[in-house]
Length: 118
Picture 1 (cartoon, helix red, strand yellow):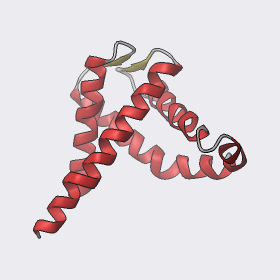
Picture 2 (cartoon, one colour):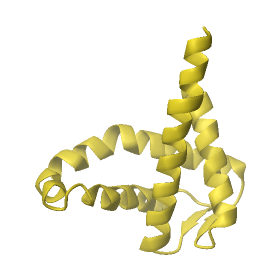
Picture 3 (cartoon, one colour):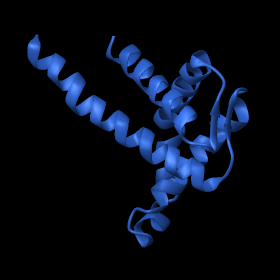
Picture 4 (cartoon, helix red, strand yellow):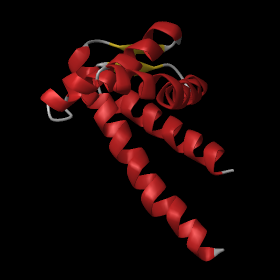
């Protein structure tokens, strides 16, 4: 159940950012849901592989290369999902940072509170 709630929250953030950021275009909510699902899959499967492969570069850049990995994952979503467009690197970077901050806050604050209530 938490996974579905997280996906719907992420989709809502994607939709809001698609309307707020001029460099990000999302056609409808279902496209945002697909983007959220694909990002979740990419973060679960591809991101750990990329982090291991680029570990020396990540260490040299003090972890800043992880932002580049996130942008790469956003570009993969852009290429494979119709109705989701990212204009350039900087919009993808801002989008990935805002989505990461929002979902991290949601998982820490909102989902954690629901666990305490049980």
